[in-house]
Image (cartoon, rainbow, N blue to C red; front, side, top):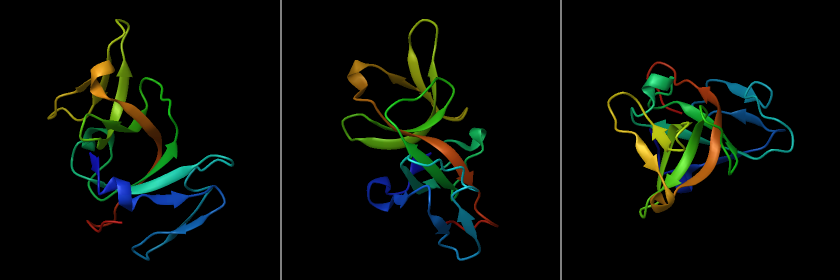
Length: 136
């Protein structure tokens, strides 16, 4: 799942914000979004089908805790490659030391190595589902 125009369409969120979504069909408190005090967050609308197996669908609004670290098994936002691609993927580190960014069963995993130009940008903490096909 790539984030729609991620670099210029990230929404800055703070743990004391009362966030009204752009559809105007509801509001979310920081508590409902699971935002913790003294942490930085951004939100973005998911675009594509790369993470549907993880329950993140096209049009969902994802809340990302800004972090430069991630644990194996967490879903994060990553910047990789010469083109600085921004994607959300499941991060896996195996016993043999290999690291992978995993999408759904229809996409090849992305190997992580020194040659990948890989950066952790954050981890997904909340997914707000799109309603009746309407995107946030």
